[in-house]
Amino acid sequence: MTNSFFQTKMAEEDIPKTAVATPWGLFEWVVMPMGLSNAPATHQRRVNEALSSLIGKSCFACLDDITIFSNTIEEHRAHVKEVLEALRRADLYCKTILVALIT
Image (cartoon, rainbow, N blue to C red):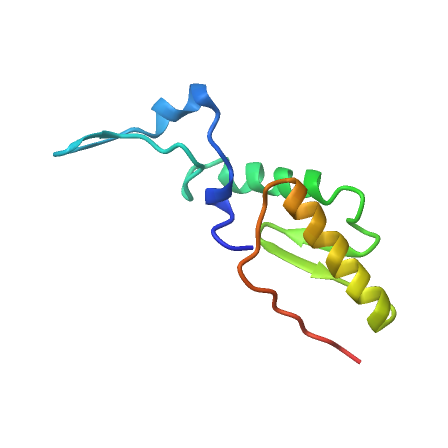
């Protein structure tokens, strides 16, 4: 996934906690920045929820890395499509797809 942390909107009540004072004013994050102590867990939970029906059956997810596995090429194409559709429904997007086929 691309810029995966930045694809998660901050809860309204948490936005002030991200404030940074600059010479140009106060800036607050409206999306989850990297570096927050709970950012990895929050992102992993979001990915797990998006792929809940597929994890362990056709894929595994670790933060922004998703491994898709299948028995045949045809099955793999279907699994890739299912994963991408599940991510899209959750407003999670990939910039490029890296595929390694092991025979």
